[in-house]
Length: 101
Image 1: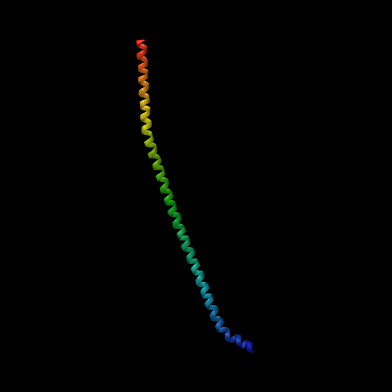
Image 2: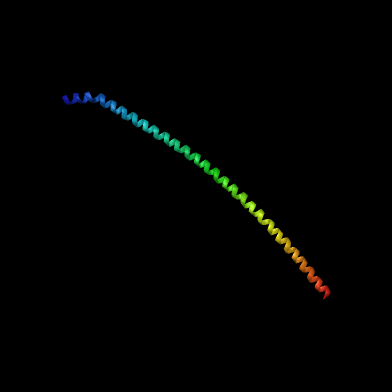
């Protein structure tokens, strides 16, 4: 009977400790949920930022490729023009030799 009385006397103290532990656990659980939401939001922002950077880099790549093709096209056109001119002069020279000869 003394043991039962001792346990009953300690019961309010145990109840207080249990309530404190329960409150602490609830606070930790809420903190974990808040951190989880913050992590999800940060991940979403990162994915958006990454997509923007990738799109921007792709657009710059396309622009640079187009510019390079334009830069390469001008000398190629000039070379073809000179080739045609040389061919015309060679034909005229051959014709002149054939007429004289």
